[in-house]
Length: 224
Image (cartoon, rainbow, N blue to C red; front, top):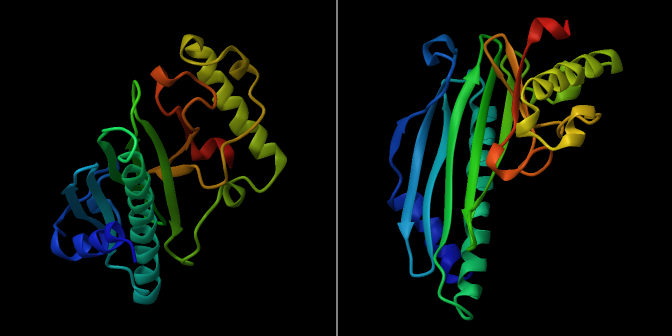
């Protein structure tokens, strides 16, 4: 096992610290809780500051453990891959890589959404960020996709129309061809915030870097 892999594994144990999660939907309204486990380290070639979501209070403890393992494995794999790249790059040029994650918790009485933001800096003018979400139906224990919320073409077109209207309201923030957007984000690229559906696109996908990660909030009632 490479040294950096062993180091990351030990960091999870040694440097773990718990805190409360952040979100825009009051956490006391959620039937479960999400806390943060922190992993922080500064090495010769990379700085890591990872906030890992830990779900607590689910009735199905096996599902809870599986989701927590999935979330932690994904974040640690992100850090390990970047650490490996940094170690290789250090042989060519002195450059401090950065790996950061943080997350926000959203949802309502029937759905839990955890949106993890990944940030990496490998040199150049700026770093890159992307978001990965899980959306859990608390009653069934199923992970939801956009297809579950938009089971027919009519609903998908309604969502696209709402997105295009928001783009048209601030066209300077988007690429010109985004006004005629015809594709929704990937099936997992959304979260539920109370009675709102929030969908997001990747950096550079429909807008320049300065816009950030484009996100669009649409009332769930619009899609009924």
